[in-house]
Image 1 (spheres, rainbow, N blue to C red):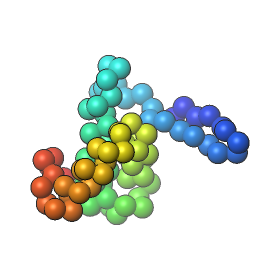
Image 2 (image 1 turned 135 degrees about the vertical axis):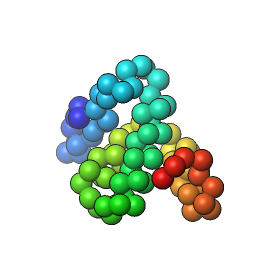
Image 3 (image 1 turned 120 degrees about the vertical axis):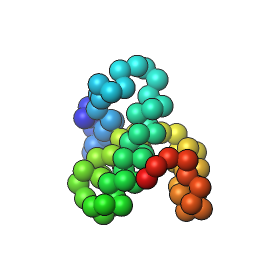
Image 4 (image 1 turned 135 degrees about the horizontal axis):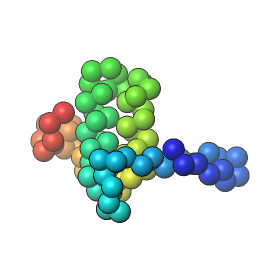
Length: 82
């Protein structure tokens, strides 16, 4: 993952994924979100691979989308297959 250090804070962004070669990263955002929830359902939220997906979607997705999707999951009406 590309990194930068600002005042002792290590910042990271999602690495390049050849499945999503375009500048528009909407699909990468959504897929990382779904992958995180699938992974945490099977392995638990603290599993290292699951944390990778979380870092990706937290880096790529607008916070409003994440909040909306979290609400949909809690209400059992999320449109994706988790």
